[in-house]
Length: 65
Image 1 (cartoon, rainbow, N blue to C red):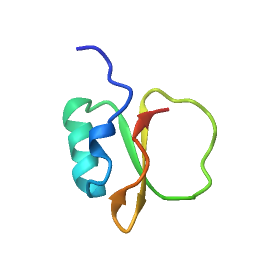
Image 2: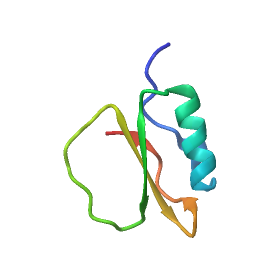
Image 3: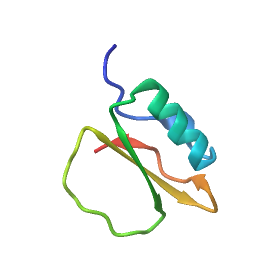
């Protein structure tokens, strides 16, 4: 299976639902739920997906990195 880098279909979904979907597709990926506007490191890690959330919903397109 080719590596997926973005999940635009998860915009507006509850964070836990989005996390479960990504982990079902790619169990090796670490999924981090982060409040919108939080400071994060700028390093690129293809085994990480950050879910930026507000009020429990994904507000930025999840992507690897």
